[in-house]
Amino acid sequence: MNKNFVLATLICSVSIFSSCKNKKDEVKFEKNGCFYIYATINDSIEGRFVFDTGADGLYFDSTFLTVHNSIIKSDLDTARMRGSGSTGFKQVLLVKDTVKTSIGNYTHSFTNSPILQLTDINGDNIAGIIGNEFIKNQILIIDNERLVLRIDTVVNPKKYEIAIPFNYIDGRIYLAIDLNMKDNLTVTANLLMDLGCSDAIMLNSPYSKLLEVKNFLPQNRIDYKILTAGALGGSSEGSDFRINSIKIGNDIIENPIICITKDTLGAFSKTDYDGLLGNKILDRYNYAIDYRGLKLYLTKNSKSNTPFKSTHKGFGAIKRSDVAIVNTIYYQSEAYKNGLRLGDSIVSINNVKVSELTEQEFNEEMKAKREEMKVIVLRDEQIIEISFTLKYLL
Image (cartoon, rainbow, N blue to C red; front, side, top):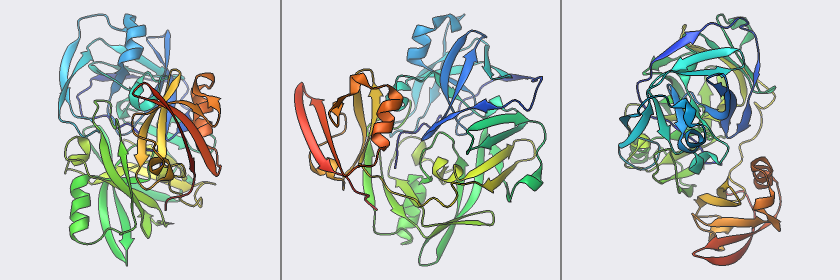
């Protein structure tokens, strides 16, 4: 499973919504684990943002702001935040100025926007994160087949098969989801809906420990480590495994792969919710989030019956300039057993130089189905060639 995700942490953000002339305008988005969208800042600066319901306001990438420093009009402020990685609270800089943010014809203004280091987890082409406050008491409508969204003031419930109430607390969406873990042992987890999460479900470490004590967790697991798990740094460790089913409203999803985290610091060590509901589940539906009526409406799409597959290559990497950094490794994989390590800089993949690939081409190469892979990596100023077979680990 792709572990390159973002979860922004709680911070107050003041914003003003500007009405759109045409509420039915559709805006295209991209999916590569996370949910990416292009936005225009202050009418002139375009950037690629993670559109993330796991975040509240607007967050900037530090490299993007270095290039576009005209966004900053006054002295920066500071705030304390805790990120997704296994790290404690850290002080970050804030852009205090009002920042006009436009997605298509939809416009929103933010203040107090934190500055984070996002390139380590999202690659070079990242400008920041846009969270729930952009929608502001309206309805976000997502079509995962056509890869378009729109923002509206009304929703037609008859268009959807499922309606689930949610709680909206501190700018985030929480849903009660039933998990049939094994042997008809079912739990109801309070999950944060997170479009910045590429997994199906990721359970926080306190909740995972509780399930472990109760013997609710399956024994067949594959273990991973992420080098940089969040925008504030810090690694993350956990395991993937299959469970019997997930129940969302009246829909039952069979044999999904979910994961647990083992972090003792950071957002995944929190106890006020049980985990994340991510895109490996949400991509199977077209849906509408009614922020005013506090309901999630879903209807199954053509992806709804797609089988869940585990990691095939056994590692994940983020393209950075002329190399790709190994950011995730699975310890049971042939890649790890044959010598690939976290932090390795991949200079060549299957006899193609990474420097000759765009970010999209590199990601497509990583997704390609093949039986063998060869990478050339740079580690401690030494060039190392590593070849390994590929197989699904679950």
